[in-house]
Length: 601
Image 1 (cartoon, rainbow, N blue to C red):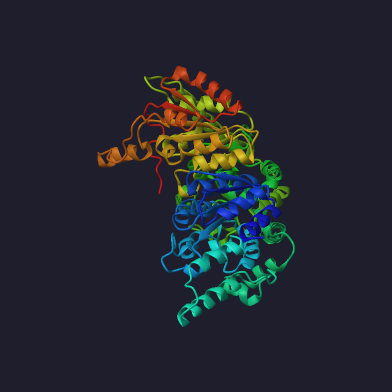
Image 2 (image 1 turned 90 degrees about the vertical axis):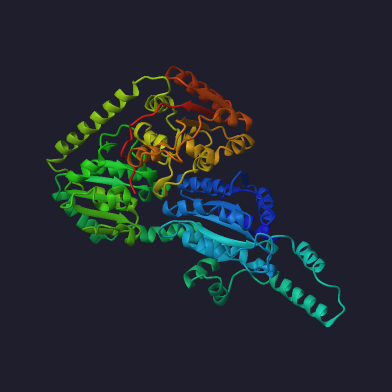
């Protein structure tokens, strides 16, 4: 087996079904070997999209997503997507090619210091220095990605470790001088010694010293040495540390028993254990208190659960006397904790103590898995007499906001009303649809109107506010749920980042439906900029023919310019997708003040 075969065999052994990539000579053996091993190789048009796709599969399935990118610009192009995965606590394994070992630092093609570039944005990094390092290093990377607070990891694989030994030796022989002078003989001796070290056929299990040299802890080294799957070991580790201590659970239950106006916020971290989402949903229902869902937790309770609230969260938090943060930090989305009533008691369940204490120290810290915390707390819930009235007040407020949105959706004009368009998407999309939101104003408006169909059926840019996730996220979502409708709701600014992935969808037979809200503007920025600075500089776009771009990539393009064209266009899009063709709808939007004053930093 060459190095590419070893990596592919390791991925196959741990159930990796898809490898996302953009080809490059530094990683070609990995791609060819992965194909031979039965892994689906999905080649994209931008390295960032490969990582976004791996990220999406990780979030939707709970198992690590894997991307492989070539050296130099291939690796650096992936950094934004890797940083996004880190902030989303998504277990992504990034495999990067690298210059030949003997030429590192000597000006080889695409040779840069990759590990230092990635280290601030990942949980763990490693570099293979011998062929025998590849398997244990990749296993350690997979384990690190899912252990504790999940996140991305990076493994660097020099190109001369990946090709067959005979090929690599022929390259090095061709690059050395024929024997003659003493210097030439010494050079050949050095090169052959180096090659012998690269291809040392000793057992792959690293010694403690070798592990330390690669940056592995003693605990990591023990994992590498074990014959068990790292995914199984990581699951066992998570099971041991996932449940918060019983003392925290009792303290939380006591606070809940004294509360008259409790509210629960559930975030992505609560649904890290994808296999448990239905159990977690049952626990939230059993608690019997009002709940707001965010991130990957959207859809946890379905679309019409009586405890589910969608609007006026800030007002609710300012009136609450108890706030339970299940995998939700007090970052800018909660105005650094200032949205919460200063007199309210706070319970924070989180795998990260630092994140749980950020900006507002909780009265009860339940350190561990937020989903397990909800499961453990539910049996202790005892409804208070004040809860039904509190919930009724909040639901009435929610209903008023929903009625106002419906009213605004009926407003007509020369161009498409974005609320009307999104309301129709919400009405006709399949019950198992997956929604991918990518953009500023249009995507954020969609979050008010389009409801997640169920657990793990919603993907958006997240806390990093990353534009460009759409194409990659949709690829990953369609592969994770091949029989479900996958919709991308694009702002026109964001769409241009990943429209080329429609080509990937066509080539790989992945019929997604993209809807571009085209208002010819970076409107989320422009709205505030015009008002505060009196200038729209840098925010003006064209009503570009995105539907024609889609057709150029082999997809179906549909133009919608008036409200009455919405229904037939969406019906056609769904029919084309069912027939196996990716579709893009280019909807010319009227300007709206729906989200005025919504920017937060």
